Length: 235
Image 1: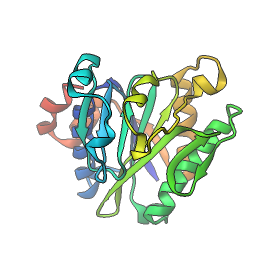
Image 2: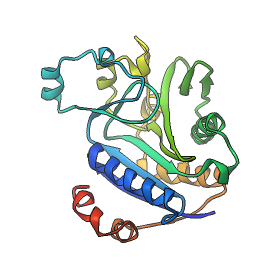
Image 3: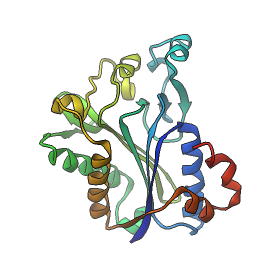
């Protein structure tokens, strides 16, 4: 399947998700082929549909001082952290086109991450009761998705080299005292995040039978219509 990918760079979570929602609507209407959105975010805690605000351990004042937003989102799961140095990748696919159900798709995203990390010499795995990918007893990547008319959105978040301290301010995924790690911490050396991105995209495209072409933001705006310009200009 031919489709597009776009890297929004380091951006605010709200405008990036506004763009994702507009792209999802275009996918549902048949105006856009498969799309993979890549981004890094300014510090933010996102609360999934089953999240409890009690899993945010810091006060609103402390969050404001640290510059961390709190945003409710429509993916599955509880609370997680996004910030610079973490790759967030959202494939907008259709389950019927890739021949999977929602549970199979979620596990396939985990497989993509496990294959990527193996290429860096990291042996990782899954935990049946907790979605995501684990290195030893620490979580190195999260998966959280949502569906609309069979179309997927949200996706995965891989800790390449983020500041891990904000994870101590939450119960990640609603689990108290969950340990979180990163590729940088596990390997003990810095990484080129763009190289990680490219390798991850290559595995993703092979896994789901995609042929992806990079699309500039200006061209994507045109595909989505002029009404998006005002919102996406904030990216």
